[in-house]
Image (cartoon, rainbow over all chains, first blue to last red; front, side, top):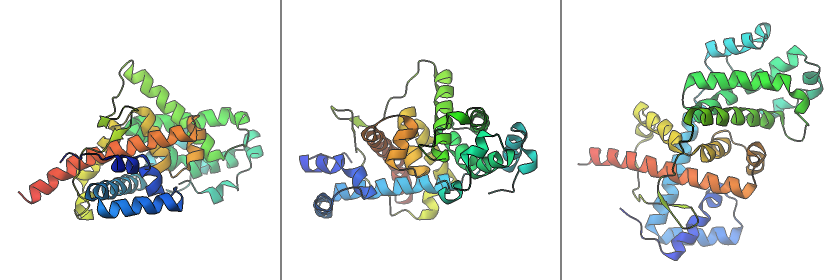
Length: 87
Length: 201
């Protein structure tokens, strides 16, 4: 269960965030892809990291300001007449 | 992400003149996002509502401080994050969060748990119990890492915009984002690994 880190895996890790954001130059990106193809552990880390971000995003996107809180906000700001229905 | 196309409709000059319609438009366009940021920073709806109200009250009174170098939405995020961090500091006093995981010499968090749980069905990954865990995991992050993560990955700001909001360098944003992401992955891996074990005892 514990990942033994080789130097190569550590190098991957350093660039992991930029890699999944697509912020790396083509050469480095290709090198990482080649490593991942042959390294099960790094593959798992990349996949579960992407999934983790996806899950938090989905959960976040479904969070909206409740209608009663929206009304209290507009009342507090003295903007009652401008309150729009839920966005 | 805040709808930037709509942002262009608001003229900061109207806000400076305290025109109510312009201000109402600003609130309507941004309130969902500011509320969500507050909720995820503080972890409860009441605090999120306080942050939301405080952010727009400050924006109304300090609109002259908006210099137009950033988007209005970025400026609002900055006010909201500062409000949230202030409230957290007040709450916690001297208590600080320690980042979970194994830290390298330079403070980076190394992946520890290597279990592939991506195979679990989406229905299970987003069950109400899983969502609860996802929300709790976000709360385990240090305040600084959580702010960077929420702005980048949940609100969809660029690294540059996040750096502006937090008043730190872009490389500092990347370091915080990376730590936050890895720590969340560790937390969720432990949780989902147990689900896999339960399913296949």
